[in-house]
Image 1 (cartoon, helix red, strand yellow):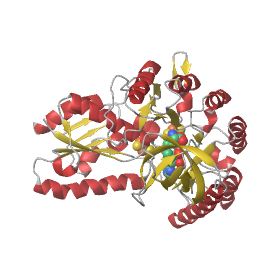
Image 2 (cartoon, rainbow, N blue to C red):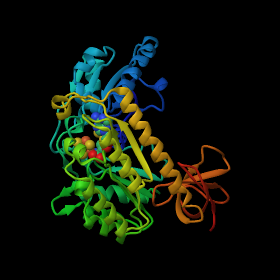
Image 3 (cartoon, protein in one colour):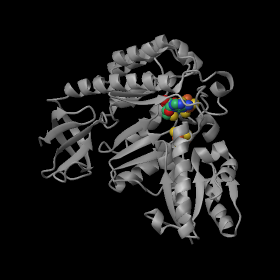
Image 4 (cartoon, rainbow, N blue to C red):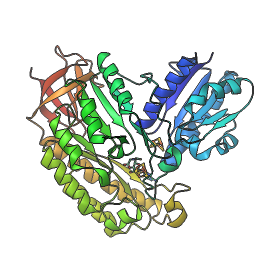
Length: 436
Ligand code: SAH
Ligand code: SF4
Ligand code: F3S
């Protein structure tokens, strides 16, 4: 039996998938290695969202070649979105890769690995319309024992014009809610205090009569002591019904990640996002009406096809209006096979994309710091997660808004809720003290 090391790149869904892969391999009799040095097989779960994500993986595969020179038994398998996108082409280009396995084919991993030991290379990249791995209890690989991911749906068919995900993850499908609630219960009974429900567009979750608001209520009812988060919401489907459910349950966290992508209606149309800036601002207003203390975060793309200075300025303007607590900010990266790659020239040069991105980053940094300064003096219930990186004498945790608070340890222990008063801040962190 093989000793397997799983390395993960990309989004939370990939991290959740690696935990499913861990379970499939363990059930097949393999053991999970703690590091590459102890492994016979390295499985790299990859991301294809931007070119730099793929380049990182290419670099890693070439780095591992040297290790394979020293350890002749060592094999490499590529999982995830890059495997799905490039298929066997990836094995031609990287000849030290033994197999590729796409996101819907993980049940075939044990067979693939056996085949490799017999000297064959393999490729399993068929997408499914039904696979949700609902019956598999993930191995909590990266977990701190307090917070865990639960995958509630797979795939995406929104076809934003820039995005590769519909091609790497296939059709949208939802997982049986009973299995989701059972997983959440199991986690709570094992001491976990926070779950994050994951999907590319959780608002369109639907399994028979259960939509996303109903599912959120079901999971929130597992225990008032268990926090529930979710990612990601698409603005076009963010309903008042969901906001009402969130407002009703204090253990559903006051934090919504709502990727805007651009502040220009012209760009949003070209991106095929199916909402306008006005619609987005209306959703913001509704969030704040239902939950005045809700934090809001976003994703944005700088330098998409044909973006003018005016469009870019509209994005900056939207950032000034909304005042996000956090933003993931990217330069547009053309992805082969997408609508934009086929029909829209990637016409903003790299230096200009960088300039626009840096402008957004600088503005957002300033806003985040200003937002945090208004937090000084406030008191929050914090779920204590662990030791602070800066000092053994300090712990860190998060509030419902998902902001990190650092404070002197005193008698606090990870996995419990404590009251913390904010005394100071940086752009990224709140600094505070225990007050209970
Ligand atoms: N399903 C989620 C996010 C998926 S990918 C959603 O729709 O919101 C995460 C983020 O990567 C996207 O929100 C987008 O901002 C960014 N992204 C996706 N494709 C990209 C591309 N081709 N170039 C640059 N950024 C991209
Ligand atoms: Fe990509 Fe759009 Fe689907 Fe998000 S909603 S994964 S950006 S296609
Ligand atoms: Fe990347 Fe695939 Fe997630 S492309 S962002 S790992 S769905």
